[in-house]
Image (cartoon, rainbow, N blue to C red; front, top):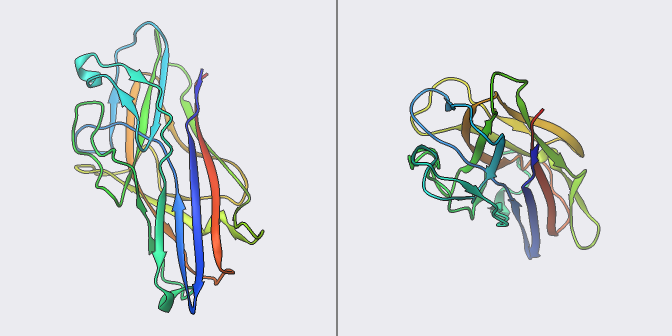
Length: 224
């Protein structure tokens, strides 16, 4: 089984006497609970199911109260405007999201902090015993591109990971995008609910040509 929500990334540069940059990204996610890195054990049940959310998702009620996930076609973005005076100076610029998802669909806990964090998570439930973990991957373009064909490597965007009330490691760890290809960004053991909050940033260590740079990343949850 697999679930595949898409995600878009955008970088924008404009020239108006001075140069400024806007960088953006999109994602889908979900999950939540209490202290310690957030992973919750689930009771095996029929049917086998997977759920992945990055940013805004859909759920009827909470999982603890018998809620069920639904499809959501929303594509969220993350972006940053780099002041002209600091473009390319090597100081990373924090990105913000247009996602409105901060609460966990596990128990309605306020897990992520908007607009600086993006909610990523979901669950992998089987009908019986332990199986191989489900993998979450990101399919990444080679670069963000502008209308004039200029490019910015996707590896200029990275993310930190945390969650309100969490300690220790995260099920969806910190990382940096590859410049084209498929990369693993996390895993879910069978019969678990897992979640993290990602905070994206742009490295700002080069000076691209002026323009708007865009790219779309697709996140996929695949179970054995």
